[in-house]
Length: 208
Image (tube, rainbow, N blue to C red):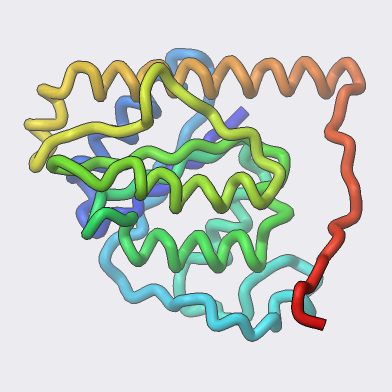
């Protein structure tokens, strides 16, 4: 089993990475393979709603000048996901939202029915609004949302300060343990022939 952890910060070794690393270490202790994907500071396109991905057989974005399609390819063989972001003006990083919009619009089938969690790091506030924005991608895509013993956040202005947030670090460890537990339960369910019951999507337009 494998979990992809996506760092939505431009800073590859900052506060968000520190939190993700705590989750990753816990997952590894549970025998789960992990990979942290760094979005970095290279330009990333927004989704332009062109719907060209709907014409592709491989569920890839039509734009291939960044890492979106590489992530979709990795997601196909992953079992769970954790998306992490710093808090900017009480919302997730713009680059993470751009990435998630394109990942889930073009490659949503690679994520569907797989557990996911959002984590955020902040100096002080804006965390719950940011968690809400990220998690909405999961709840529109049939994904079980993994929780901890508090909202999935750490506080600090530097990685060193995050390491002083003992409660925040515990939240990350509990999240890692809960993700591992759920993944193993899902695997046992598959072995017993249990699978999600799927319905074809109904679309209702209110302006006719």
